[in-house]
Length: 222
Length: 228
Image (cartoon, rainbow over all chains, first blue to last red):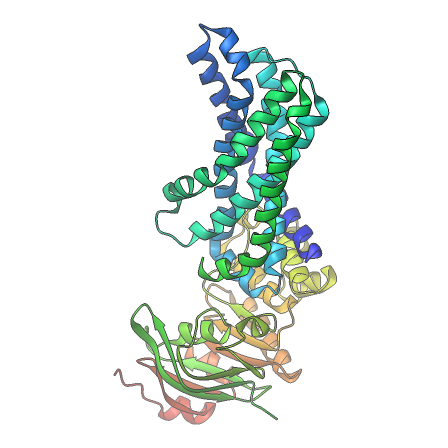
């Protein structure tokens, strides 16, 4: 299973590296969200700083939708999804590979957005350990749930518009948990953030486990 | 020895339309079988059923000793399907595509490169993204990907389409070698002269059922397909 996951993740990341959609479209989109919030709330710079954590994760959330849509779109070209079913690859490995590739892209995006939050919102980086662990746990949950719902929507006719409707409510706990943990870190009270990190960890474990079990059946119907 | 393929009254629905309406077919290991028939006869559907991609809702369907209705996944890893789609990723190079699908089938990179050489894919093309290939080159790579899997059952849908003369000769040689090594080949084609010469047997489909099956030379001379 892990061998197959590495194979699929390597393939997806190589394709993303070549197509540059993540760097030329998803990343600018996420930065644009930060900039638009900065324009909208600039009159009260204190509010921007206080809301920095939430705005950061809203940008990540919307970018997740784009990233998992793109991840599934790779498999819709020229019958690739059928080929995956025929390939002999373990469906759990395919799921883990695709989720891992999305996670890598999201982590890279978060580094970029982190710089944006410091520059645009004036949020000072503090509580580095809590920030990093929160980002890792939240990203694992976002990538796992996103990959699962993306393959669920892949067989639907209106998948592009339906996926955000299905996915965003599911990801709401990640938005809340990651925002609270980031706020705790940025306010210099990391102790309050670890409970939220545990919630994020549970979310990630549940969706990784569920995806590992269910992805094969969902791929059959996609 | 059990046949490589055994269908009895197999039914496959596409929505509510019976694309296969009770197919009876038996194919021995090592046989090369040509599927022919008019458009909409059920040839492509039959190949996709045998690959385990479409479900049989009624009847019996055994492929390589596995009951397709119960266990389609066990069949898939032993099948090589060449469909109308090439199953290639545009952004990856020829070699990367071939290596990925070979390794997915638990084969090696050497198998992938050997298959590309066998299909006459020039080494200068190995580093070229598939998106930049011509349709014929792309088709050759797709056949090489199937060959690299070293399947026990080859399912080829219009395999000669888009290939030039040398490509067609290479494909025919590949099919003959696969059969000589014990592999079973079912292929659908409208190119009757070349395909009939390649096949051990011709099976004619029409209206989702088998209308006729016989030895290749006799079939060429006498077969008539009647629409239902």
